[in-house]
Length: 140
View 1 (cartoon, one colour):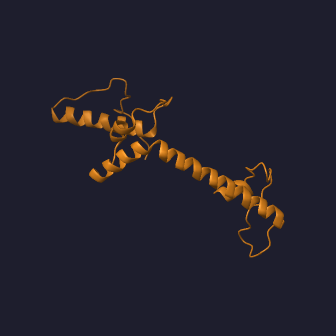
View 2 (cartoon, rainbow, N blue to C red):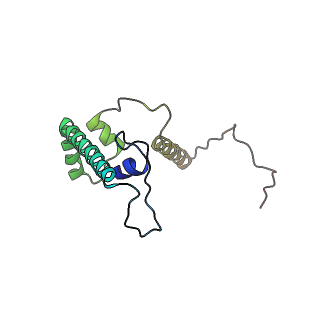
View 3 (cartoon, rainbow, N blue to C red):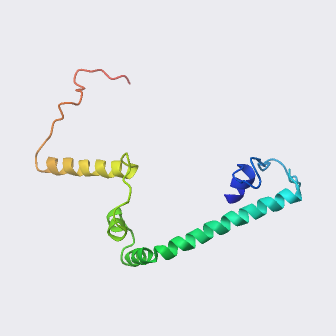
């Protein structure tokens, strides 16, 4: 991925806004750039990977306690749910401006559970806002 960012998509200050996409149908062994440019690309990729690795180590050290707690939970339970993660990590520092897909899924699941429990008790709820399909002919 890093090689593609540098050589194909041009996300590198050293290489510049140049793009060297791989030729898929070609069996050529020649590259469309010089050995010097290849060395610059390799150097840039190596630097970016090294920075990402260092950042990862920093994050692991910074959050070692949380990682250990999650590992312990995984040894006890095979699957962790959102509530488990909130218990260990706390609430997210930033709330999403819109509900996430998971929130929508969870909300729909909770509504279905409520409807099932009402119907099992004999309660029915009629939604007056929903359009009636009585008397309508639907195309086949």
